Image (tube, rainbow, N blue to C red):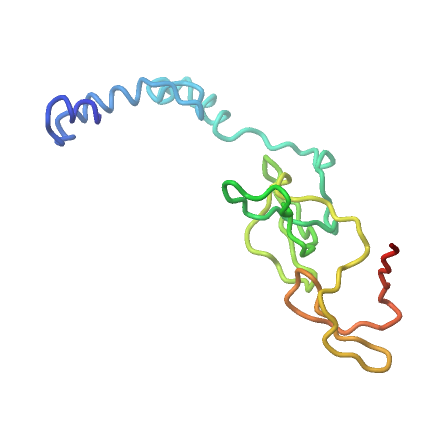
Amino acid sequence: MWKYFTENDTKKWIDILPALMKNYNSSYHRSIKMTPEQGSLIENSAEVYKNLFPKISSDLKKRKFNVGDRIRISRKQKDFRKGYLPNFTTEIFIVSEKLKTEPYTYKIKDMDGEEVQGSFYEQEMVKYDNEFYEIEKILKSNKNKMLVKWKGYETPSWINKKDILQNVKHN
């Protein structure tokens, strides 16, 4: 189209619309695995439907994650991101639902039980098996409890002092 506009010093696309339509409809489309001209024929309608809506696998056991699994999600990548920066969030989420999609997607919720908007692909998630959470700061303390700000989380929480493990670095 741009080649035509340049060669003929015009921007009147209406003049070439029939040729554009013919070219488009006779070109192979990978979504339907044929040309639109072929796809519009009655005898090809079942094949077009099959190509556009493949059967979803009923075998959900091949999935990488199950409901209740604790995971981290991928950070949005920017071009030329520093290699030493973490690729996944510090916040931990819980898989709340396996969606019947292909490729597999999941619904997740945060540790407070609030659903996270959207759904996530397996490759955007990584399983988190660690039982420990990193403390960013201890905000308050009384006899038996501490108000703790967790690394990667917005909301602080009160925990028993006996539940805190001390990390000691040996030189």
